Length: 65
Image: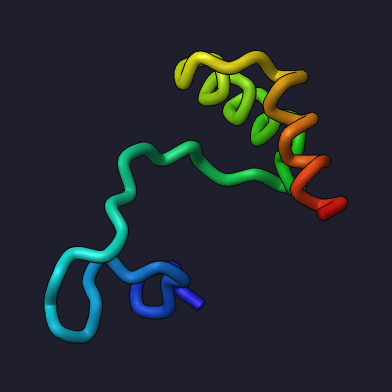
């Protein structure tokens, strides 16, 4: 695996249309960066105008239904 020819998310679909745009490179991690991912998610939730507890409660409610 070289991370270019075998990338999980190609930038284009087979028809040549854009598919995924990678906006920011966060570097490499020796272990799964759980705390980093959660902090990024919290920032995103705040940017969309919701509180973290409101967001996690709504996700929890979807799992129950």
